[in-house]
Image (cartoon, rainbow, N blue to C red; front, side, top):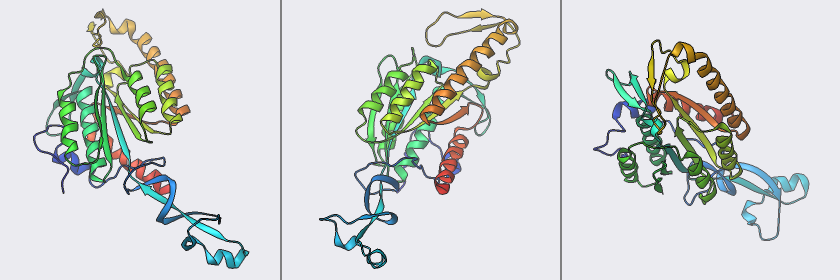
Amino acid sequence: MSTQPAGHRLLDAAALLKIGRLSLESRQPMQGSVAGKHKSPHRGSSVEFAEYREYMPGDDLRRLDWRAYARSDRFYIKEFEADTNLRLCLVVDGSGSMRYGATSNAGNGDSTLSKFEYASRLAAMLGFVAIRQGDAAGLTVASSGGDKHLPPNRRPSHLSLLQDVLESVEPAGETNLIQALHDIAEKARQRAMVVILSDLFCEPDALAECFQHLKFRKHDAIAFHILERRELEFEFDRTTRFVDLEGGAPVVAEPSMMGRHYRAALASYLEGLADGVRKADIDYQRALLDEPPEDVLARFLLGRQQRRGRA
């Protein structure tokens, strides 16, 4: 059964072909209501052995290890890792700065993608992968005008609803990402994989508090930091009018005069962000608009599978 819906522009066959049969792996034990492919914090009776523990009255006698008894003259119970399903919480930044875009070779010929469109494609593909493997995907679009929520669901038809929400949003206003992340960290009833898709234009200290909150609640957090290359390199060569897409006044400036100050401020911001990511053990992925989103996602999924294989 296919989970790819018709009539949406966020998913296409060429992009999904690059993802192939890659799966979405959690770094932490998950809790779910149906059997799945992810580790659970609860012990169960799946095929993968976890550890021995001493027998306690009331334990299932079928799980006694008689060979261990023969060696030690003590009763031991075999415990196994129980597999479970995952709840994927996609958090897409819907602030005005996400309207910023650039020309990229992301398919057949040049196409213009804004940061929000790029984030939406990543989110749709992540939702596709999760639902295809039997996991539940939900969505929050964080916006100062009011967040949009779609509760996690594992039905294939849910992917169409997820795309409907993303395609209905016009990014605007200041970011509400900080509050949205605190809300998810606190209100999610079960451990979840929280995927943040944003340009992260927030104070690094405030973001670090969000990351620590997610860590404290035992969520597996991933941040896709979506940027346009000129924001990093600042290769403007003529007098330019810079517009604040989140509502501030525009500024006309000579790049050669402000470039050094901009790069210093950027370096300080990235250093603060990296410090928060490191301390909270966040999985950080930088995504530039001139790289096809399916390539970014395939690299991320493959990296997760490789790390799990070495664990």
